[in-house]
Length: 112
Image (tube, helix red, strand yellow):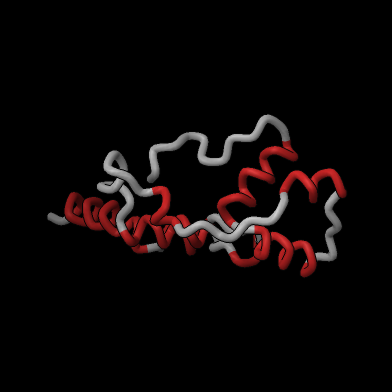
């Protein structure tokens, strides 16, 4: 969607989490950690730091604005969550309006 691959590029697992936290925010990370009673290694906690959640619109530019449609941003927002319980199931994800053009194209091809 944002034409940035990989979106979260880390040199190792610690750096990877730090990159994710810079986008998804540390308040959300801490809520996840507290919910599941997970304690971060002090070195990792220091590396992650404190960050506010970035709005997805911050990643939209002239090169990707044609891809960053509201349905795409909503889909991405639902998928990129720390808590696996908050993410859609595969079936729910495939039913998301982001895939309506695919479903519409498929149904128009199969009509007699």
